[in-house]
Image (cartoon, rainbow, N blue to C red):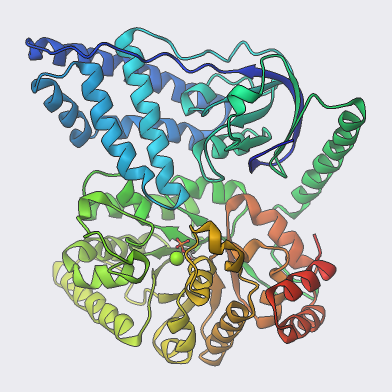
Length: 568
Ligand code: PEP
Ligand code: MG
């Protein structure tokens, strides 16, 4: 059995179609007539853009708007003056067009792939896609056409580029296997949007698996069974029936309020990274946005997005949400999220360093345009501002005084904004959890970021596999921080949410209900399942489970116990 990342749920049984990579070898030529070479590049660029636009149209018609936007994002990147002028600059210096494209793209790929978080790394694969597409166009070569794949095909590729995906005939493709990509990679997003089971990051998949070979792709568990026996095929067919039934069953939660079994109303929001994600929030029946990671607006650019650009992005998101709340987290740069053009110094200890609200409060020239954009957009809907990585009251107070000054500026310009815009704090450091009683007096809401809270509480670098065994939100130390934060929120009569990944964990949900969490913010694809699980717990039962779980002394005991009472 081969193992990989379970990127898109479901089971596919079919025959392998290997997607060969195009040979992009080219001769490095020294160019003397650089103007002619620039013209050659511009022609290739034009034809690449045209092809990409038509692929995007195809994806829009067959898959959806959001997925088409992924591929259109390539156009924005390549049309960005920074990228194209660097390429032309290299040609002017005597490189042939292929080499100039490769050099500039490799520079971006290097920067993006150094990031530790999956979403930033994903930008590297976008640039890789642009590089392949452009060089192939310059060489007059075509990417593999998978539109002719027969029924029951499992696509196996090193990476599945969005442009390849545009050729997928959904009814014929029963599974996707790639050697790279994680849960948040675009291949994963597209596979989930098309509801095709996918297992990604399977080492050496393209050499181990052979064309025509029969395999089973278990996208729920990230497993691949090669040459399955009849017994295995029957067993997996049964699992498929159960999976389909469960999915159908979840549909009955569409349009329902999120209520516990004894009728307590819970807010069920989503985490997003760009305005277009708001479409999925609506289509998956999310009740709002609990975390907009605005750093992705910055990462998708080659310079700081202007106040107007940000204003348009926030306004667009709000309009898509038509009245639903939108919690926007201000720029969370640093740590695992590098934004090269901000010119942050290399640090010995980036997670403990000059990042997030610390950076922003020092670099008011960067922060002010974002805050003004947020204020200006606030008249178009229910925007709430959230600060990342707060560790002391001073940061919140300094932020509030900065916001006040910006409000005065807007007053003097006669620009309208919501004067009562709520300002909340992410509780994602042990310091913030410890002083939640103090912060609660100044903040309008809390949102618990368990991804970081777990790392900082356990003093564990989440990218380090040697200490990964300690990285669990079920560690008693983390659970106590969560409980305390919710209690302090209640004491100060402010709502408390959770936007870390733990919010959709079926084992965590009863504890959060017992502690009194008001709002769960999860990925859009987890909305219905989370709504279902919440609906299965009464407060009384959740309290009983939480009391027992909190009396246990080790993470292993807690997880074992919660597994014995879990409802799914
Ligand atoms: C968190 O830390 O839990 C969180 C939601 O923020 P991010 O994952 O963006 O660091
Ligand atoms: Mg965080």
